[in-house]
Length: 226
Image (cartoon, rainbow, N blue to C red; front, side):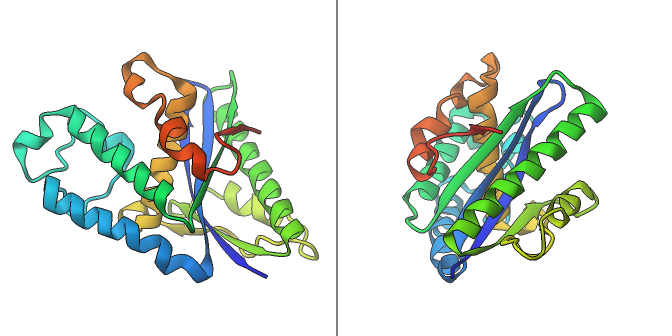
């Protein structure tokens, strides 16, 4: 019996109608092996681009016009520098043998509160799908989610699983992304999956990041409708 860790984050927005959940997955026995290449990447990034290891790689902010991630003012003026960092980060994830990624999505015409209900239902169905997969393999899983736990729909989804048969144990564990490198990886995967679906003209540079860098480490080959 294996224990699988799923570090997860959401992406999307009610204005676009897209809801996305994505994750990076690792066996608990390979946790150190999965994290080491990423930490080495962060150190190289500090040396080459002067982006501190402690800087939170949050994709929406990192790729934004007002963010100044580097201690080098000149580096910050060129957006292609940021795109290259993201491509390198994705390649690190894809090249780490013990890691896999995944993403699910839903598009809805609902907005605001109704959109949130659709998003909560997407998470509920994702938890059910992962639980079925783990049960079939005889494994157990733990989900670590970005956030502070104030959204109770996440806990509700877990507690709807039947105790006698469930393979995802416990409620989701919450970690703030600025303190957890794994959750920052999940944010990277979620943002990339979202942009592959949204295909906003202003973000054309990100349209193919998932297909070009992550598809080979995603058992499904790309984000799945759910």
